Amino acid sequence: MTQPTHRPCSDCDAPRSRRDFLRTAGGIALAGAAGSLLVPRAGLFAAPSPTSAAETAVGRFYTSLSAEQRAAICFPFSAPDRQKINANWHITKPVIGDDFYSAEQRATITEIVKGITSEDGYERLVKQMEYDDGGLNFYSVAVFGEPGNGQSEFELTGRHLTLRADGNTVDQAAFGGPIVYGHGEEDPAENLYHYQTKATDEVFRALSAAQAQQALIEKAPQESAVAIQGATGTFPGIAVSELTSDQRELVSNTLKTLLAPYRQEDIDEVMAILKASGGVESLHMAFYKQEDLKQDNVWDIWRIEGPSFVWHFRGAPHVHAYINIGGATRPA
View 1 (cartoon, helix red, strand yellow):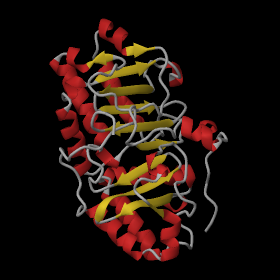
View 2 (cartoon, helix red, strand yellow):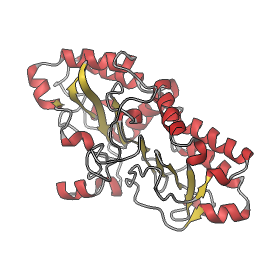
View 3 (cartoon, one colour):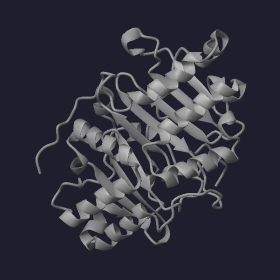
View 4 (cartoon, helix red, strand yellow):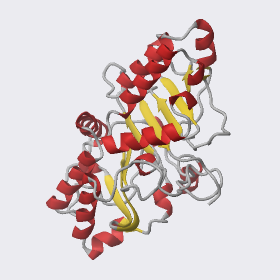
């Protein structure tokens, strides 16, 4: 396989020890101790199922694996690596384009990725992966648990990307847990996800001067700080509940824009989780002054957060987005 077209990224490429990784982007657990991102409970929400298109493909992919392949990319559901998120890491050593996988298995992985995205979302992913690291062949996958037999999850990771397919075996976790997307293009006009900042900017432009002052904050939190806080949490920015009906409609439209790259089943689960924790009115929106690209007062770093919802978008110098949507935390 040819070498990837690897775009430089100082914040992605900085060397880290395993301890550093666990402390920053690592350290984020999907379930378990107090303060974890989310804790599974009984299934309460509409969601993908083990018979959804992507999960059916995951089952076929798992069945096709040899003993050698399973030893390299399959792990218990409780394995720590399932609990990590990062803007640039490989969950397993083999990359998809290696001879390690057959052509049929590579085709099935592509089918899985198509199954968890919308048509537009898949097209954007293809362009992003090609730009950032030479294409899907340079990303890695893992399977946790045994598909069709209890909790299981397929995970794809690589440069500026973490995607999951879990068939709702991780309850109260939209997308199967926290996900990451991004794009290394630093020109906003060319970045594949700058359109999302344009959508949030419509909300900001609709705010009154007093509202804008409340929503605009000097410095952003760490991009990977996306733990679910629950109803007792403290959220930055302006409360959507304090907005006018027209402004709230703009927020709702922004959420539709953000969710559009994903399959409808995941969107439905997100909206069900959000409704159960107070709806759009439970959210806050924050915009950050730091790293204002082009000095145009279009805030390139923003955050939407509520009791069950965190969407942190860092658009400068290029896009890193960390998303975590799920049930409120509690001790295991």
